[in-house]
Image 1 (cartoon, rainbow, N blue to C red):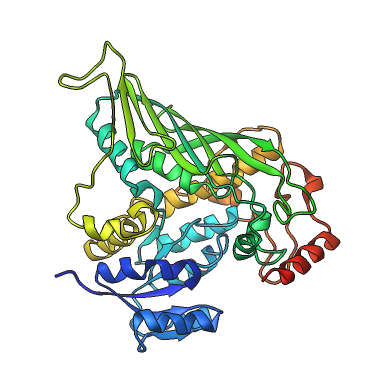
Image 2: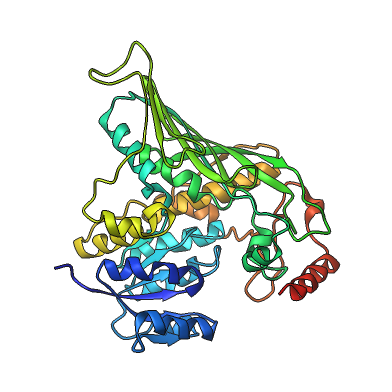
Length: 416
């Protein structure tokens, strides 16, 4: 019988979507924290009336017996809360970027190294069925030396769907209105790192600039529809990835190319993969070209198929709990997590400088930490109303005026 893990969740908008996976993996949610009291009351309906509820993180993280926490708060605000938990030797699962600034990345790594607790990034896309199949094929070696890979996360939003827009970005200063296209990079980059084992060491990026209409609710501070990032990796392979793109049509796709062949999930293929080889390097017993739907080969198949993001949400929890129980290092530990955040942050700077290359720091090295320990540049509004210190768009004129932001908030109030 698996040991029960006493778990806490900070942020119930996204966090509530993991209840089923947590309970299925013998997790006991003993405490939850959110500013919205209604969400706390809703949590009791799913988790039982005995679950402790908090509106203040500092009180929440001191909950007696709390063993691990799940950070599901705003995208760019995880690092300070992760550090507080690590300082108390509480395990941390963080979704879905490790640090919003380079300085936060340095501080997070230093805290993780001092802590007896585990830090893991809750990146779920690598665990989708087709990505696990690609990892299996790559591990088999039939593709030969890996040369090139592509990762694309594309999530356009209907500009006429005002209710959905309000749900995503309910006020002018919301982080999604100031999210550079490179920052939300883990859904495109993490699967490639997972499948190939390669890590980016140098990047460059270019914008795809196509601003939305100013009178609408989209693109308040960002006129770019996508960012195309090129990564040189530690094994001399190259990745080409997007951050969170917004061109037609919705989907996520990945392709892995080796000397002998390549494998990819088909765009619009409902999860099918295509595996192809050079005619002179077809493995014995294999076909030159095959297109098929991979199957789960997993003891928890039924539970996996019931959870979100193609089963990825279940794997994130199962792997995190396994690492705690077996004292194992997570696949996406604090070093992998801060590397991915660094790719997103520095790719945006490359984009602002029309493709200037940037070396990706390795925060295992003190010289890299010292270089960035005071780098607090951010495109987002601060928790206490501090203005952004970095333009969120490739074109500075996209930064909204106070009048435009007020008009946005007024429009939001009118949407029911």
